Length: 144
Image (cartoon, rainbow, N blue to C red; front, side, top):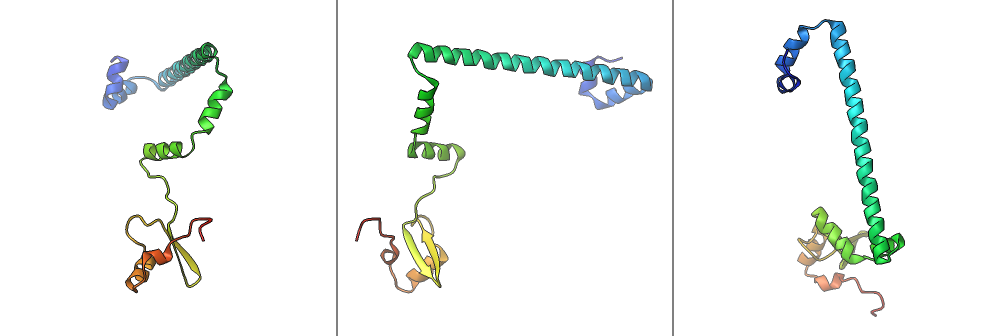
């Protein structure tokens, strides 16, 4: 019989060697392999948990050395504001949403535009009719 590594590299060899075994032998082999798989999964999970616990110990040690509390980290994370939104948007490959600068009401429906990029059709029609962008400007709060 071939080695396991050889069997795994070729499905054809695996099938050929499996045909040489009786069904009861195949079932025993499958049962044994499932037991080995379960044991390896358990072993890997324990290893991951041990690594996680070691990381937590390291972080707690650093916190103790610097005199910080875990609450300090939460406060720092919450206080990031607009810079965090920009960074997050850049990380995702998207831009942060821009507030609209222009508003136009047509047939009772409000249309908003940031002023960036190509003008929406409604705004383009408004401009083609001889109006200006300034006539659609949204007034900032408190200016009038």
